[in-house]
Image (cartoon, rainbow, N blue to C red; front, top):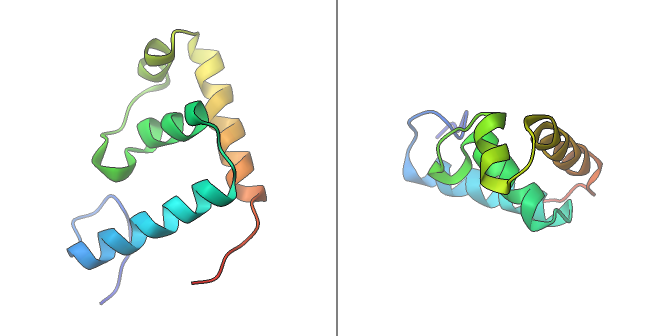
Amino acid sequence: MRCISVYSDQPPECKAIAREEIEKVIVNAKLNDAQRKSLVMKYGLFNAGRHTLAEIAKEFGFSRARAGQLVSRALEKCREAPKFTR
């Protein structure tokens, strides 16, 4: 079994593995609720559907630019998070 992407049609086992890996990254990155939700919305994680920055901004009640900053900071935290092993 080869798992490629969270977005493509894959066997349930791959989706479960991808979800677990993403959850580990989010936990290790110590994202706050807004950062976590903005990433889920922006990238359509966990079958949430992908959203634009304007839609994310409307959800949180601030500007599109601020929504972009929120997503950007969340991604930075994910990159800086300690690596984990399976």
